[in-house]
Image 1: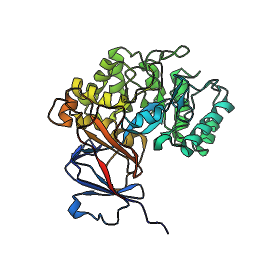
Image 2: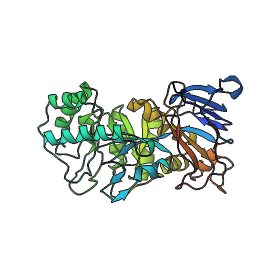
Image 3: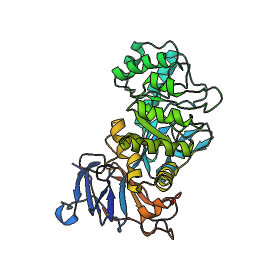
Image 4: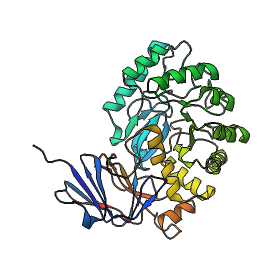
Length: 391
């Protein structure tokens, strides 16, 4: 019988937990067994014997693997939208270990008949369940709503393993009342929904305004800062104030509008609603460092602690999406990113540097307790690097 996999991460500087209640934890060791976190604490107090892999963090920060709440995958690690290969692997080098599909809308010849769209959703869910590019977890199979769908269609999708809807409004269903009925059917069968918010993203899409968003009542207000064109300020604040749904801010949107949405969430005392995505691949291409850039932008221009902004891309999303990752605590998936101040960056330490708008350096990623990448080829080089020293 093979030995159970045991990962020990020692000599951690500090831990970004992903939890708004306690975003920073001063502990120096994490133990994971068979891909899940078993213990977090002081090395001298933990069982670190018989490790199959030992990582010396060399004093850097340990954070949960970042979650991109809004991507548009197609097949494998390829996007026909920009004719780009290995875009998911590139995002791993930006610290992203989990991605959530908002619809496989860039599939050439995407079927819009009900049988075809259900088939595509089920196939997408299956192929990303069976194939994880560079180990990244892709939650895919997100059908776009089309006219003529009935309750039994959602029941069939759920029974087949589909758990997501693509952006409401990207298909032929654009009226809030019709969308609202379908969203209720999806919710009844455990399928989570996201709605397009703002002006048209590409030719063929259309405006989805605040009234439509509120009538549809999707679980996530997708790219509240527009993808790319944002709604007027009054409509953005209205959406934040008029419901308790997720407030998703994306890289491929209006940055000023994103700051407005975040500030409104804080004014309401509801920062737990804020989650981050890139909305890529899209017309703007792929942004491997998009989530890190959003963290730095919201912290530096939004005047919030960097450790809070990290929660938007980890624990907030995990809780809202019902994921087992995104938080460093026992029982969660052992998905981590090792971070440190970029070489020669101002600020004194990593969090202070991010508050000044600088990106950190990624030194290593781990998914399900397995090292997936070493020093990032995309971030600025980290001052210190973790290293595998045993196993």
